[in-house]
Length: 189
Image (cartoon, rainbow, N blue to C red; front, top):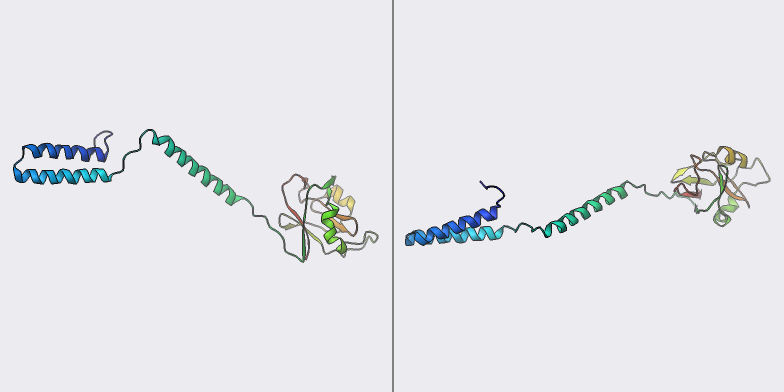
């Protein structure tokens, strides 16, 4: 059994020293056995890695801390939502900044021009021909074909798409799409 704070290596070296001391006073046959034993004990002690010195401990603690930080970051990234890009014949990401009024935001004309030809006729209040879908982080918004007043006042995912006038929409929870860190897509299925 090891005593106190002594290591296995210390114990083996102590036993080697004792074997060599006994070999000096032993008979020739015993001396050979004790010297062989001392050589074996030395080889076993040399096979044990040295205990890190105090100078190595901060380094090892730093390495352990880096591994901890790495695994914490890897776990957090694994929990982050994977952006979902919807599928369709035409898929356009609606890019910030949006003009905001009430709960309604207006997508930039440069963005919405790619789907302009599919829009409802703004002169015909009953036109609901636009097949456009708006997605918020991969989830479809709606109802579609809302009036500007309804989108402005009630929001909650309402949207409209008019030829020559662009896309007006609201977030699902009426937060500002300019700052809510969600991604919006206009999709023609």
